[in-house]
Image (cartoon, rainbow, N blue to C red; front, top):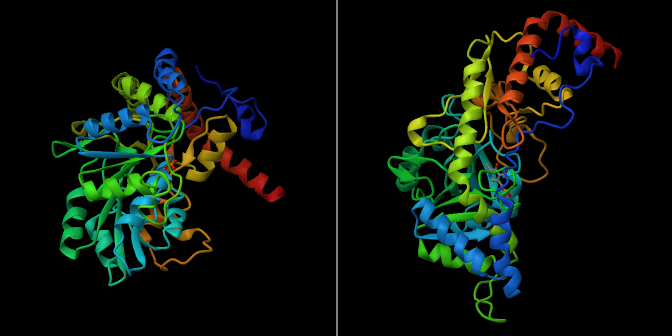
Amino acid sequence: MADKHTLEDLALFGGARMFPAPKPTSNLVRPDFDKFLDYSRVFFEHHQYTNDGALVKQLEQRLAAFHQTEFCVAFCSGFWALALAISALARPGRSEIVMPSFTYRRMADIAAWTRLKPHFCDVEESTLANSAATVRPCINDNTALILGVHPIVNFCDIDGLVDLAKERDIPLLFDSVESVYESYAGRKIGCFGAGEIFSLGASKLVNGFEGGYLTTNDAQLAEHLALIRGFGFNGPDNVAVPGGLNAKLNEIHAAMALAGLDDLEDQVVRNRERYLTYQRLLAPLKGIRLLEFDESHRPGYKNIVIEVLDDWPLSRDDTVSLLNAEMILARAYYTPPLHRKRMAYPHVPVALPVTDRLAERYILPPCGHLVSNEDIARIVVFLGFISANAAAIKVRLQQREALK
Ligand SMILES: Cc1ncc(COP(=O)(O)O)c(C=O)c1O
């Protein structure tokens, strides 16, 4: 089973790559093709490709039922779902949005579109997400909105953030992109805060090629967002809300997402198998810790997160470089954190010691539809090989560095 026997076998040092095609961290799940075509027939035969078509309506109804909320509004992306929901909810006249820095790398761009300044908060070491305790010190008279962001494994502090938002009378929006499938306190994720945002991108649990949606129980918010995503028009040329734009989901994306929803339960079984394979094979490997899902929340197991512990003999970044050279497209998890990026737009300068430390420790290894259990076994054997040969690898890496 071992692919590597000597240092020369490592692709970073000139050896053959382990995989001819990339093993990604992107889900890239595909529904049954005939099912996708069956849904697509609806828009194709009726010549209605967009503008609140039958499939988008059906998708919104199914997603609202899935998340146990009254309303669901679909968008062309999670990005625009977030930007438009933030704009709709932010307290007028205030300038800051509190959000984690250890998060999705485009989050600050979303804030920039809303013309709010990111006020980055720290995260909890135990959840890798923001909490009432990390958000509270960032709240001031300028706080327009709190963004709670669920991490890849388990949740952010839902109850604490809901209570804090109520106490300070500040709207709370959840980015629940990573927690689509889960339940918390007996309710599906989707119904907490003023609203929750999800993505239908190809790397997500429900693949609509692209797309996003908001779930909410607030009728006014749902109505406003449904108007604003479609130019703000209510009937031809009647501008009901100013500032509208074209952020609609179209019918073919809805067809793909609907077919994906039909396959969701089976997909989660497959994802869980991959997760359990990682769990079983990584257990004996010293220095690497798998972040475990809390199975009581019924997770979707879409991504895998591993922590590089102090006794792992290589740095996180060297480990990722060695993996990437083999076409194992492992990713450093949230590096650099957003407050460390060079930003051309305004933000509140902050020091975030926990985020800084955590940003050096995590790896997303390959997962999803293009990764088999055999691939995982080979990847874990590879990790064992580089760990066992770490001292010699470090010497080689230093020599390479000196030659640059
Ligand atoms: C946590 C998080 N929020 C928001 C988004 C934006 O979603 P989209 O890619 O659909 O614009 C992403 C995308 O990866 C994400 O990971």
